[in-house]
Amino acid sequence: MNADNMDPLAESELNSEAVFDGVLLKVRRDRVLLPDGKESVREYIRHPGAVVIVAVLPDGGLVFERQFRYPLRRSFLELPAGKIDAGEHILDCAKRELREETGYEAAVWRHLGVMHPCIGYSDERIEVFLATELSEVGSALEDGEFLEILSFSPAEARAGVLDGRITDAKTISALFLALPLLS
Image (cartoon, rainbow, N blue to C red; front, side, top):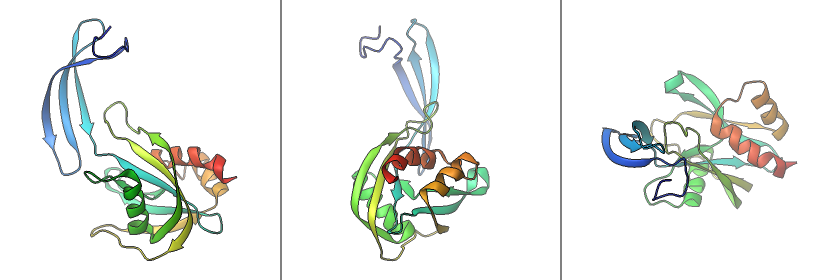
């Protein structure tokens, strides 16, 4: 068993090197000690973390965005979300992202949990929030950010997941956590 961690499956870092240091992502390559005493290499992405917001309109509809995602060269239906800035509290980030991207502010916020979208190659975590009692205040998109704002009922959102129109992992996870609270 690893002395630093009581988990018998834990791996211990022997050394670590920066492979790439980008604006958003940092790629690391670590040499690790495996539970059986052998060594291996782990390459992974360091990510600052993000938030995703299930924002409920006064009519019960959910705020969605349609946004082009360059890596897959197509647009996706997603819940509002964004990267946590250095030193930023997760709730402050959620409030900022909802306002910037959708033009809404919420009077009531509830943290629903956290999800890890890419555990095989990234340390990214996404904090999930439910936002209710929305009021429209006008969007403030960042320079270079383009998206469409849409509304789906909870039933339409669920159907979109099941029929393949919604494939974004953070959106599916957030809906899974929020839908029982919306019915």
